[in-house]
Length: 110
Length: 120
Image 1 (cartoon, each protein chain N blue to C red):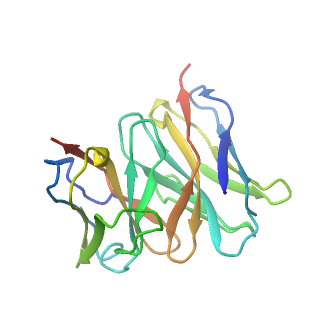
Image 2: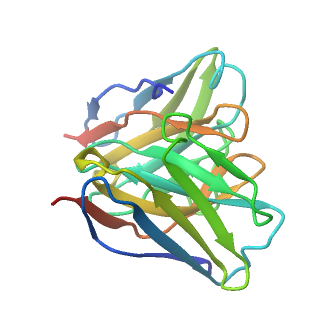
């Protein structure tokens, strides 16, 4: 069971926008609109930022948005702030009640 | 407010079985809306889904770990547990317990995580 593919790192300046991609296959990302995104600060548990591809839980800033095209899901963070610096993970439903995570992307705010 | 707390030995010897328990408070593990599961994260690496369990006892495992993993539930104690057998140093990781919405297959609550080290 291979991990979903994410870039190892992305960076942007405060106020700018960045996009993190998450590439899977027709067995996971491409077959279900069930991708979630998690933010993880060092030493902390992951925090849900996006679910069902593009929905935001209550309390999550509208600067975070999600989308999907084919086998690739994307997380966009607009109006970058210093507090957004963290690791981000995508996670997709992969059928038969299983989940598959991406390898993670380190977001650096310059 | 739902809380999940991992507990168990922090040091396990190679070839032995790693055992962790997650205690759920602030909500019932017997809800029909959720699975309860485990995720691990080796130091400096990414997240890996280990498996999930429904309160009835139905289990779902990562195929790559299936032969070594057992997840069980004790509804009377509002707890669920993980056993990972034949561990090696590569199994050293922070282990998180978590709640997963069945629909839409989203992990929405996480425990704080516990580091388990495999070493002789």
